[in-house]
Length: 331
Image: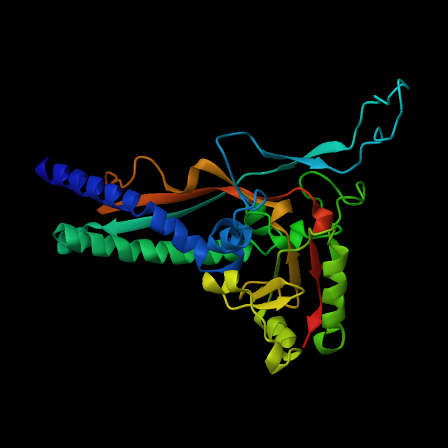
């Protein structure tokens, strides 16, 4: 019995220590890779500044699915009038909802009994826990960033919806099919070919097509290869960078005042044109990279203590036609 009590005490200590490390773990997962940082980290915050439209992250406390309101039509009752003439009060449509499934991810942190016994003392246990936690956060970061670019069909469609399905002109997203709802198509340009020949002009047209007034793409993401092809088009005197993006640690260039960064997980030959007004990173308040209750446990029959870090959320869009992608780019 005393040994069991000691085990419980160690598990409680590990649980408390990991809970205190939770904020750092969350930041480390999201702030070291461009796309995750744009969706839920320091890159997105830097681009947002203090404006009201900068918040991409949305925290929910429940719901069977994630429901996002969409506006696809205009209000036909707008008109000028004079005096006492009758005004148009026709009820308007032009609103609907898109619904997105919750995606769930977990990563476990396990410490064997021999490791606990050989790392006596609080400082030694903290060092061991930090090493295990770093391993877990790096692995989860890699998986989430990869999935954030893909089409969401991996692992029997249990993954988050990635850019390759969200920024599409053909894929059903949120329960709405572009073939039925023409306004639910992203701006997709395929078969771009040689960047040196076609890339710069295609980029210019894409940004202009996605811009209304002063609202347009606020970030361009691509592969290292395409990024370097763009860099080759610039002269040594015109290698402009965005200071906000650079200040949070990401190498970047600028095109039409939009920062461009490269990501190792971006789909080969693709260049994405993003806008934080029309994208959200939705998470559940109880599973936003949080430790599952009751923390570290030592099950009967095993000489090991384990804890789970959970994520529940998805990437959500609300105006698909204001997002774009160039595909089939070659050097």
